[in-house]
Picture 1: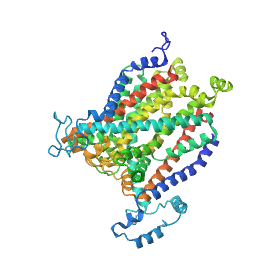
Picture 2: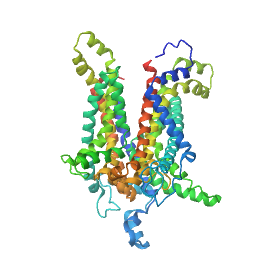
Picture 3: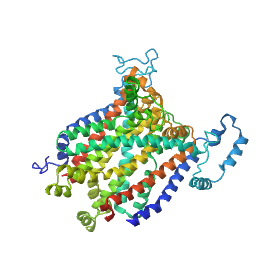
Length: 318
Length: 309
């Protein structure tokens, strides 16, 4: 461990050096990055379109033409996995931006800094949301929101005389995003709030305030840098959970709608909702395992990265 | 401390009222018309209106809600739209019991695998065995149930023919084994991580150093001084496990064909059977809120340090 910092490295450099010592962490970062890049560049990488069927070649095993074989409609599994990853990428990134970053950080900073009635309202709202059984709430929200949101988008299309909005799949992402929102923000918000509480009365914040610094300046220059480390750690752990929730929602047919691919939708496609996936496991293991292995790697890696970050960024340990 | 508990007890009914308000709102303004669901193909405007009047669906929103709450407090959650003439309570009770049994067994499995492994990792903290256990645990934690379930069925039901493939027959039936392990294995990984980190923290505490310095035998230090204190966070997790009861076993119940609460909550979401959905969410939330309160209370009893703060 480089704790005495002989070379006067910046904190980012120190962080990178410390992180590079976590071999498994580095491997996981590389894995997750590659998966995300595949998702982002799906249109370029996927050999076929996700909905292109070839009824002359269904349930085929892997060969040179279809590297992971084809499903029961003759669609290329590799292409569907790649497009499915794109769904995961979109959902996790929007989840990160809206839930953790925007609501969690923003409300946490405000509640921690202003306390009083604002803090009371935010905290009680959070308690209210977290007293629901979470998967049930997500499913319920997704199921009740979809028709409303779909109607809104149809009326937008009609009134503005544009088309393609509904078919772009934006409704799916919006439904998933809103349904997952209650899950993601409260933990982050509470953590940020606690951090702000603890540094609120520290000497340098006090003296900044007495020297006339504006609240905005105090929050952005003095408080924010102190809450970034815990924010990164919780966000990392949260990403795995968000990815899995999307898979579960789409598995139940409440998330991404066919023909648009999602890893969860692929799973319910091969096994049927609650149907037997055992026969698939013996007859066409590649159909079941391709989406599963991606999910498995993502959850595993996000947690390993989270652990590594906790180790490095946790100030108590140094 | 008493003040805090009293405040929590006072806040609890308000919280549950708000929960019910939200669910009720989703039910009333959500898609699907309950009358249409009930009448099915026999739908005609006249009988629809008659039923609406009888069910109180023409009343203002808050009147409907107040009526619902009034009945719910006495345990009457109305009638299911889909299962005709069955009260929601009579429908849900047996399913709740099924899920409870499954989850209790899974919890026991998770504890009995997770605690020893976590303990083992902690006493090996600093050498190569500890990270191995941690990675091993994480590997199983990340394993999707979509894989665990068919894989276990394939090996233990189809290849080795030790247990039936699916179904339900209570705690003492062989059919509970596979689903319980499917839930229990990732659960065990949670306990490994929990016990490990709490044990490492405890082993670093001053009273452990003192005990060692006094010459207390290592065994006694580990078991009597450290382990008992390291078990404290398990109490917190029990609350979350209760939350798992209302949804955590959803996919597993589906994959193994178990007639539990997860199965019926999904079915009622699909068929827009709002009285059932509302009852499940309300019962689930109440259980969660009450359990968390009890756990907070128990925590102060077994860990006197918290009461002081």
